[in-house]
Structures are given as C-alpha cells and as structure tokens.
Figure 1: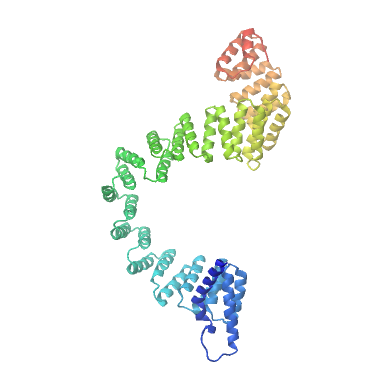
Figure 2: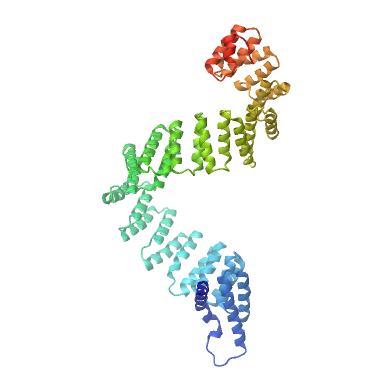
Length: 575
C-alpha cells in the first residue's frame, strides 16, 4: 500500500531544500578536489535535512538539536538560522527568534521570507521602528517586492506617521491599480486626519473602478450618513433604488435620511417596507428592532417596535426569533399573556433557548399559572437538567399546588446544583423550609430555616416565615417573638410582618397587645388573612359582633383559613 503521508512529507522536504539547501551547503556544489572539509559539509547537510524532518512533524526539540549541529558544521548557513528563528517564533521565544532571524538576514539579504519573519518578530515585540527600517531595506534590496509597502504602511500607522503610510499605499495603488484593501486603508487614514473629502474621493475611486460592485456604493453611503451629508447620500441611494426598487439597504438608508430630516412618517413606512422584504438579512432586522427596544419605554417607539415585530413574523414565520423578539416587546408593554403565547410559539420551533424557557416560567409565575409552570418547567428540565432555575420553578409549582413531597424533591435537586451560588442556595433552602412545613415535617422545616439564618443572620423573610410557622404551631413562642421583633424593628410599617408579630402575641395570649398591632394595619389591608386574624383577636377580647363583621369582610377578600365559614355560621372561634 502506498504511504500517502510519507509522499506528502517527501514533497515538503524537497520544497524546503529547493529554497535553502543549494545556497548554503557546499556539498551541492561540484568540486574537483574533495578534501576533509567535505565530511563536515556532509554532516551539516545531513543534520539540516534531519532537522527539517523533525520540524515538519512539529518535533521542535529534536529539530533544534539537528539545526544546531548543522550550524556547527556550516555557521554561515542563512537557511539554518532561519529555521531556528521559525521554531523559536512558534514557541514565542522572541529573544532567540530575533537573534537567529537577524543572522539569517545578515547572511542572505536577498530572501524576502527572512525579512518577513524578522519583521513579524519586531511587530510582536512592538519594535515598530525597527520593522519599518527592515521593510524599507527589503523593498530597496530585493527585486519585485513592492507589495511589502502594505506591511510598511501598517507599521507607519503603528507609530502614527500617517503621511508616510499614505505614501506607501499610493505606491501600491500605482503598482497594482485600485484595490479595496489599499483604498480602505487610505480612507481610514484620511478620516483619522479629519479629511472627510479625501476619504470620499477614495471611495469614489472604488465606485468608478468597479461600477457593478454595489457594495462600494453602500460603503460610500454609510460614510456620508455617518457624517450627516444626507443630500449627497440621498443621490447615491436613489441611484441604487432606480436599478433595484426593493433593495433593502437602499430602502433602509432612505428611511434613515428621512428620519434625519424630521419626516418620521415616510421614514417609518420605508422601514416597514424593508421588513417586508424577505431577502433582507434576518440579523439586520433583529438588530434594528433590538436597538429600538433599548430605547423603551417610549409609547410611540413601543408601537413601532410591535409593528416591526409583527411584520417579522409575517415575513419569517418559521424563524423562532421572530416570535421571541415580539414576545420581548409585549413583555415590556406589560402584555404578559400575549407575550407568553409568543414565547411558546418560539420554543415550539426551537426548544434549545435557555432564555426563552426562563421567560416562559417567569410569566407563568407572574400570571399565577401554576399548572402551566409545572408543565413548562418539566419540559425545560428535559433540555436543561442541570439548570437550577428550572428546578426552582418546578418546585414552586408543586408547592403552590400543595404537592409538598414533589416540591421538596425539586428543591433538594436545585440545592445540589447551587453550592457555588450562595443567593440561589439560600433561596432553595428557604423554599425547602416552606415545603417541609407544608408537609408537616416540622423538624426538617426548622432545620432548613436555622441553616439559612446561620448563613444569613439578617434574612428577614426567613425570620418572618419561621416565626409565623412557630406561632401557628404554638411552639418556641418566645424565640418566635424575638425573631419577629427583629424583623419589625427594620420594617415597622410592613403589614405582613406586623401580622406575624400580632399573631405571635395572640398565641402568647396577649390579646390586647395583638389588637393594638392589628389596629395599625387592618383597615388599610386587602389581605383576608390579616382581617380574619383581627376578627379572632376581637372574639378573644369578647367583642363577638365586631369579630363576625371582620370575618365576613375577610371572606370577601379571600386567602383565609379553612375554619372561616364555620366561624361565621356558628359565631364561634375555631382554630
């Protein structure tokens, strides 16, 4: 079987020898008198060839050993110095790379590749002035190297010698005619010098040289627009639209021109026309909408964004991003139900987008769609099983449906995934405390809350919930009171926290104290739990009629205990 790898290696070796060997090794020269020096030359040539083999297979350590042996037999070999310079360049050993590259150029100042490598080394070391001198010598000494004026021009740019750089690019233009690379480089220099007209003249060269290349016209228009030369830009835009009325770039450019002139109506119409163009790049459309979204909230701009996104859906109905960006705008416009519908359409096309699943679960939560949240969190976990956020929403959905055994499983899983995220870890342990309490596993519930307080002693939410659960169970009431007092000291006007404190006083049979606290909040509250609790306190204080009045009021509000109807119907207190 033919070894193709060996053939490739042989060809590479022959190529390298053709460049270097005959120039540097006397073995290749015909001599009538063979002396003892021939053996030294042969050894140098053999070591060089072995070095090339090792270099070709990237075995640089052995390559260096062979090239150094070769140099000991033939110290004036430019090729060997060049090969060593290449190796050290690849290894980013700039000192040795420079040393050998300079020696190679010194020994053979007619090889452009030697100059090129040394210039690259100078560039890496930011020794731009030396690189300039080197390129100048290369162009002067080596025939047919005018193309290196491009590198020389870039070196002049590095040291801010803009006029010298222009001269280099002018020489290239003279030698090779109008090319995009050279013209673009000259334009950038003119713009840096504040010479807009000169830059525009260069752009016109490209347009004239390549009349069928519409891209150069577009670049000229962009330059004119960015410098507020709207009338000149409009002339070029009209040239494009005359040939191609539906040209998306031309339509967009004209839209920008009209907007700059204060004609927002025609500008918006043109923008919609561009969005209806199926040939217009989807990314370009998305970038336009996103740039406008960043300017929200703004009522007129919001409506424009919604219109553009609707056109995007009509034009690109199978692209998930169309629905996603429309949903983003609807979310900003607080049209959460419609936003959710469109996120779901987006995920139906492409279910691999983490942020879309995140938005879906957030909206489920805000809309209190816990059945939907359960389904959507489970689907998200099929794609992202290691994302703690979806375990959180899954656990929350189960918790809201009172499936406490399943919610604790989800929260425990999320807890494992949050060991390096303290904020999320605290959130999961807090939710575990709530779920274990719901499951009447009070020991684990208390342990979870205590764990949170060890990690965050000022976690007021946990202190409130924990102390409330203790008051309901009528356990550790003095400790519950201490926790609650700490909370209301920080939040003296928070109705939820005051309700907890009052209920602890109630559990301690301090009915008068509880009433005093409730009276601060009850008439301002729309929370059925707070109003029912106040009714219970009034009943304990012997104010039966007032108690029934507040119980009935609580029933209208909702979020009450399972005993409320019985309390009202029998005019008795049940706990």
